[in-house]
Amino acid sequence: MREVNLRSIDLNLLVVLEALLEERQVTKAAERLNMSQPAVSRALQRLRHTFSDPLLVRSGDGYDLSERAKQISTDVKSVLANIKQIIAEPQFDPATSKQIIQIAGPDLEMALYLSDLLGVLQDTAPLMQVELDSRPADYFEMLARDDIHFAVSGFGPNVGEDQFHRTVLGQTGLAIVMGANNPLANKEITLDEYLNARHGYVSLTGQGPAFMDTHLKELRRKRTTVLRLTSFMGVADFCETTDLLFMLPVSLIERLAIGRNLVTRPLPTDLKLPDLNIYLYWHARHHNDPMHRWVREQIAHTLNKKVPNMR
Image 1 (cartoon, one colour):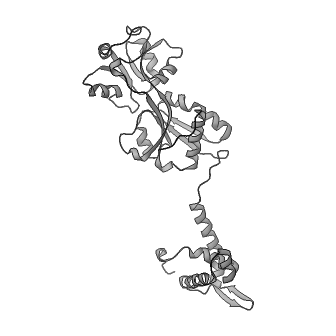
Image 2 (tube, one colour):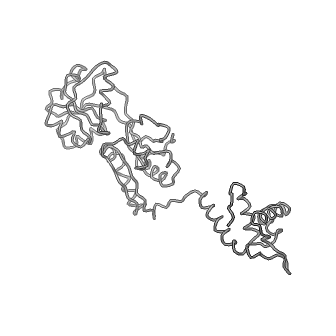
Image 3 (cartoon, rainbow, N blue to C red):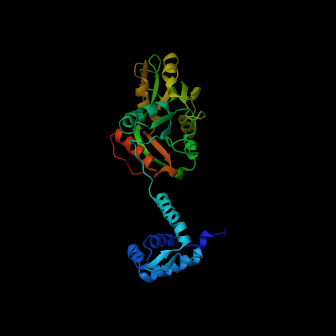
């Protein structure tokens, strides 16, 4: 078999070849392709040179297929169908899809913003599965490695920001949470009182320092941290049994405080921070994937808002 250099071949000729093999006549093939008869004749000459075969041969009542043309007729149709399938936009049917949606993020934030997604899947995509991963990790690295489809985070990536798209799930303020018996529970907390207190914090990556410690360093101040957690679930227990203060998003504090002996206080005036946006992130490689688009639309719908512009 002779070696074929595809770069030297005009693959558009395959479309003409398919018409010629089916119509067995230049004139009819030209009408079918909306081309001029001379243009199809020239294409036939190029095809004969490419295949080293006449392809169409004169017969008593017109033209017939050469033996080589008969052999390749089915393959040509199949090749063109495969090319169309490759180029065409992939289809996604939630009713029959068995895909697994993998999402990573803090446990409480995922419960707060994504809990209604399961109800949507139950009704419209009963065969799809959701895997929620709240283990401490760099969620942006997981997205970059294609380990997950989505990440929930109130913070942005440290590097490679142009790799990711995001949409806002919600917005929340930041506040202090502590046990109701804490000496600071019933007063406005000053900056000095805040700095002299003992603190705990939640590290979603399993590493430090905390966001507040970085902010204090910029102000040339420092607080005392004695506990680092990798999950929000233990915050209430430690607040109730110790004198520790935690700074958390208000939306999470409200969920943690249900049935617990906790108190929420505003941050000292000197430490006021802007509200925190909670984002759903995904990698650029999946931005146009129909399954991803559908999931984003369902999440937006459950949050009673329109799908925002994706950056």
